[in-house]
Length: 174
Image (cartoon, rainbow, N blue to C red; front, side, top):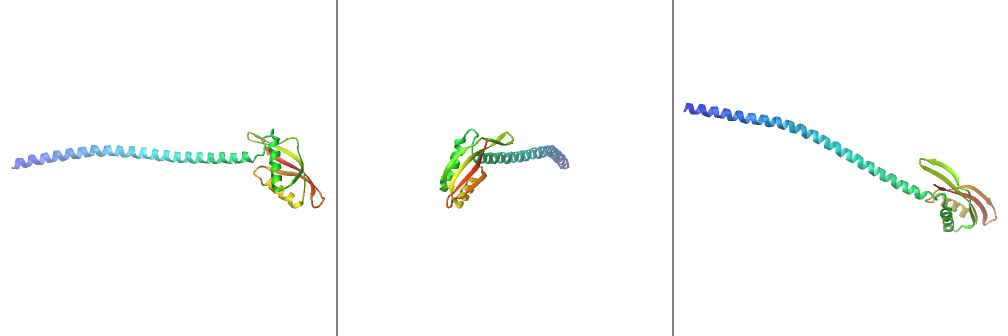
């Protein structure tokens, strides 16, 4: 019985030794796996942040493109296209009920170079016959329209209630 007990004890010691050895080997493997997991997890987080930053950059680029389209629409004309600007001025005048006597395009004037764009002013000599209030509303409509217009000269000759007004209106174009 004592012999059996010693054999059993030795067997238990060997089994426990094997179990501890196997667990030790596996535990060291878990350490390596844990280290790899942390490394891969860190790289994944970094990639997620990069993707988020890329997404924000793409969104910002799309916003800039939208703003550029809006600005391009506000540019009244292509310097070779006088009729478009003439039409815009005429439409604003007719919407306000202004009596236009004449509109004459003048020579295109270089205004400014911005990056790859050359901007030009296309002046028009405009003669109208209307009262002060209608004139003020017309100028306001021009300068607050969706296109870039500015009145650069204004000469009023009073013939109440309709004044003869000569003005130079400039449209901005590329």
